[in-house]
Length: 316
Image (cartoon, rainbow, N blue to C red; front, side):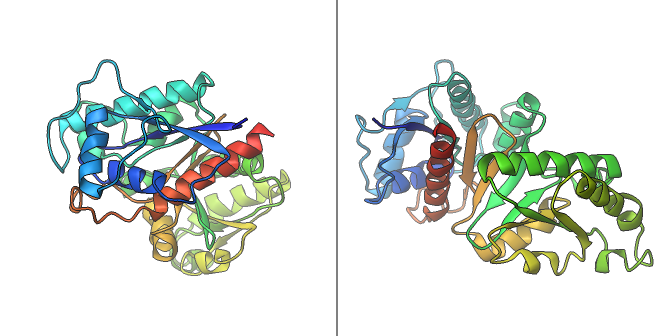
């Protein structure tokens, strides 16, 4: 009996999501411990088949089409109908995993611009999931580096305003619990400072002294294995090739510049703190190469494999 069923959304129809999904599912080494179901339009899958030269076995990989959203008509690039379609795929898949019809969810990349054109208020998958599950954490997983982000899709000025003692402390407590639920053991967290040299004892900024440092001490007193604040130009080097260590970035680019430098092709976006497994490739929609059969599927392959691995752990 197959123990886990993985739902995969196609992502934005005008991007590379459908292409990398087909390439990932067409590989010989597809995990045998799982079955798969796709959420998307049949016409989008057929278009990706023409681009990639692959043929998806509909019996092995059934497609669930959205009931209320028509198939998009445009080509590559962000569009309102593509944004509405990609959100419908995602919403249907979230409903399925919450109802227990699938064990885990892998999401293809979506476009914030297309969601905006469709009139949707969320900036991405994690923001939508955070509305349903307030403890949701955006994290990134690879063999070489693991990363969690205090904030993600926010303008930098807004993100800096979130670096407060209560918020950092609550984040670290929630992160430790979320990681333990999918990776039992003793993960250590290395928290980046905000300022150059982590503030240089207050000479280059006081956030480390007044906000970040006290939050870390409080979390450590609560049993979290955490160190910091560590100068942001060395913290990721300290977490590199350390399987039981996770770096904590204080805002989106502080963490993702480092992560994508070492794991762009094979990294996985993981939403922690959910009652189910959700993964995604760590890249975007790739509108510039959509429709050209040039998309690299390795990050989608890693996202699918990690979803299966984590779902199997939950099923045991």
